[in-house]
Image (cartoon, rainbow, N blue to C red; front, side):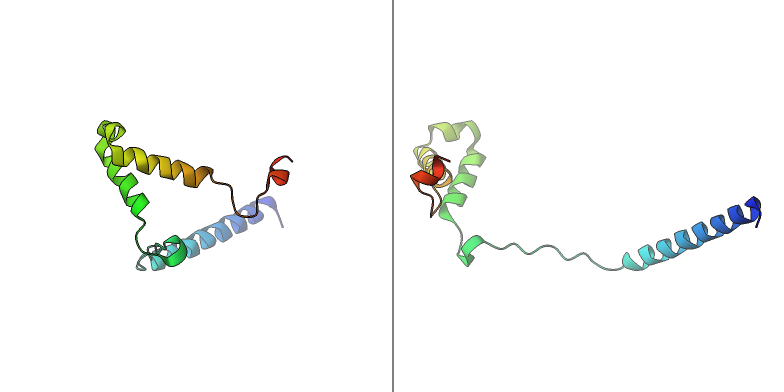
Length: 94
């Protein structure tokens, strides 16, 4: 085969693949995407600390003077910085 014949064959294959991909994509447009389900950790009800932190975030600068917000932030820090179960001082030294 000569070079021009291979070029034409490559172009035809490329166009065929492009048309196939476009047809598949157009067929998928009718499908509605399924929103991801929100799952709370532990399957428990609403977390009061999370709700209080959200309220404090809505207060903005006034949250720094609110005693409820200060307590919620302290509790959040304690949760975050608490050692994980099974962690001992010997493992932390490594």
